[in-house]
Length: 318
Image 1 (cartoon, rainbow, N blue to C red):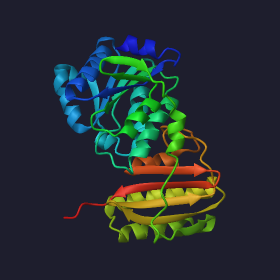
Image 2: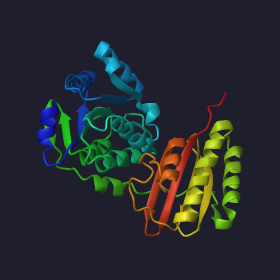
Image 3: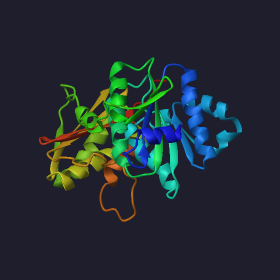
Image 4: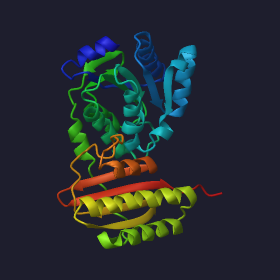
């Protein structure tokens, strides 16, 4: 499939990003196993990042060749879609800087929540920007039998090439920037949430107050420490990069503690927080850390300011 996919995506540069639409496990295997084997036979490093159950099925199908593949359970590695580019895709590509690589990545699966999905769609769109000049192929499977019409339409918009029913074609609906813009939105906080303002003189106070609220809402131990770090990074970013002030609100939602930091700045870089840290890089580590720590990060930015919202899952009741 390699040569056919590259030919169909001619003019797109060295990066190829097909969506594989499957309606059964047979179609899933027919679309993924040969893709992996073609890479191994041609000497290309291969990584697979799919939900756990499919991960085990693919490993079994590959038999002894499975040891030549790097494996990631996407339900863990990609629970926060904002972690996938730096922590899975870019990390693997950077391990092989002088070789073409191929990756199977399945960030959208039945069971993703409505809160998570917009971040998934934006992630798929941003892959095209993040790897436009990299010699690599990222194949993204989509369950056409179980995902809804919106997810399937977005897949056509975020992938220049599609594969389905044994047929490969260019996507006439390809428009990744439109998808990024469409999901640049957040619902308002709950009506009983009163954000606390802060400025440069009250950074520590704002972080401590937000962390104490998270503790009262049920976070503790290491996860409370993660919350404090993430909230502190966003509060500091607002002061340093967005006019010196902002506000922070904390609440619970669907089994998570949620923190939102709002300010008057505008986040113009769509890949902010999705690039791996580079030695000597003076900026850009704060949002990267927030993505690393949180179970989900959502951002809304525009001329009227920026809101960054992160989610940490509460412990299950005993």
